[in-house]
Length: 330
Image (cartoon, rainbow, N blue to C red; front, side, top):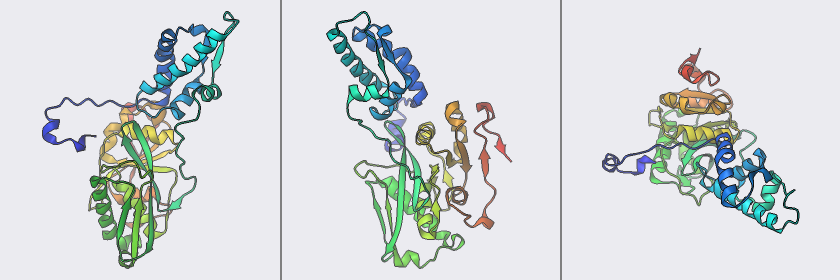
C-alpha cells in the first residue's frame, strides 16, 4: 500500500511487488512442496497419507486467510501431527492408511475459523460490491447507502480512513453535478440525509479505489434503482466523473472470482494489468474497462441511466489469449 509511504522515502526503498496465489496454485504448491516437507518433519511416510484436493481447499478457504502459503503449511503440519499421534497409537502400522478430505480436515482442525462472506443473491437498492486490496490479498466489500429524512448531511461509518472519506466526498459532488441527467430530485440533497456504511466496522479501511463504488451506491439510493448483485468494481473517481486507475488489480480479480462475481468494472488505464491475471480466472470473467462514471452506471445499475448522454463503452474479450487482451470487441 504505497500511498501511505511518503514519496521521498519511496525513492530510497527497493519496492518488490509480490502478487498472491490463486486457489489452484496453492493446491499445487501444497501437493508438490508443503506436504512432502511436513511429512518429513513429522516422521510420516507419504505413502500412508492421501491429502485430497478437497481437503487442501478446505484448509485454504476455512482455516487460512492469506495471499501466500505460510499459514497453509502450518495447518497442514497440524493435521499431520495429529495423524502421526494416531499412527503411534495404532496396532497395525503396516496397514496404516489415512485419507484427509474436507470432512477429515474439520475433524482434525476443529471449528471453522473463516467463513465465506455472504454476497447478496439479488439486486438491491444502495448495495454495491467493491473490490479491495488487503494485506492478505484481495477482498470484496459490500458498500451500503441509504436515505433518511434529514437536512442534507452525509454520514460515513465503517472505520474509513481519511483518503476513503475524501473519496466519498468527491463521489457525492460528482453525483450532485449529474443530478438532473440522472433523474435525481435536487431537493433530496437538502431534505434527506445520506448514510454510507462499509461492513466489518472493526477493520480499518482506506485508499481511493472505492470511489466509483461509493458513487454507484449513492446513485442507486437516490434514484431507487437496484445495483446489480453480480457486478463488482474498483476505481478512483474525480469531481468530473473520470475513473482513474488503481493498484492491486490481480488480487482484486482473484477476490471477485473467489466470491463468484463474474462481471468486473475497472479503469481503462488498468488494461495493461489484465495480462497478469491467471488464465483460469480471466477466462471466467467479463471485464468492462471504463473512463467515466456514466459508463460505470450503465453496467452497474438495473435499467438505463441517462442513456442518451453516454458513449458506447468497450467490452474486453477475457476469453482471448493474453497477447490479444488489448483488442476491444466492437
